[in-house]
Structure formats: C-alpha cells, structure tokens
Length: 136
Picture 1 (tube, rainbow, N blue to C red):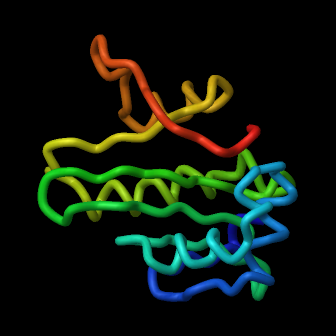
Picture 2 (picture 1 turned 30 degrees about the vertical axis):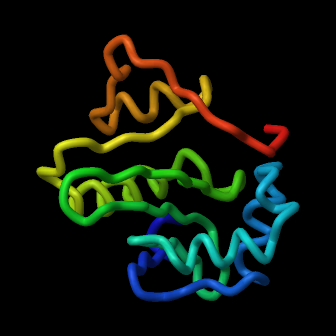
C-alpha cells in the first residue's frame, strides 16, 4: 500500500481534505475547522501524504527559522497507520530542521515510543505546560 502514497511539501490541502483525517483520529481541533486549516496553511512547513487524491497523513512545523522548531501535528488516518507514513513525514520534517538548536514536540503516551525511534528523548527535567482548549 505504501507504493501508492505520495508525499508533498508544496501541496496545500483544503478543509475537505483535512477534516476527515482529524475526525477519524478524534482530534479536538476538528471542532475548529476554519482555524485548523489556517494554522496548517500558515505553518513554516507542512508535509502531506496522499493516496491518489485522498489525504492520509500530515505533519507540520512552526519555527523561527534559525534555532527553534516545534512539531505540533503529526496525524495519519487510522486505516493507514503502521505503514511508515508517519515516520516518512517526520524524516522529511527533521531533515529540513537538522542542526537546529532545539527541536521539540509534545507526545501523548501512546506516541512516545514512536518519537523515541525518531530520535527524540524526554526534555531533561522540564515539564510541558500549556493553556489548552481541547478535550483530547
């Protein structure tokens, strides 16, 4: 199946592409569709994964362009998980920001092992902190 997946760093998905992906994963940002699509389109980087015309995954980055990059979203449709799509998206994002002083993300417990395989580790004694309006 991975043979039929293409990746892009230039193709901007529209809301009709994005919403089913976020709903299928029960991500609360799907409840703010206009903000979600704007956030993705205004990211420093956006890597998308497509099976023909269907968006099956994406990852984005927010960065100052020099020292710090944050990877807020990595999402793959449940039917396409465990095929290497997320790994390829992260590989492409991390390649672009290789050498940055700080590369960071927040991982849910189920994703920690995946991100460790990508080279991430717990951030010393720091604690993630946020003001969050989601429910997931």
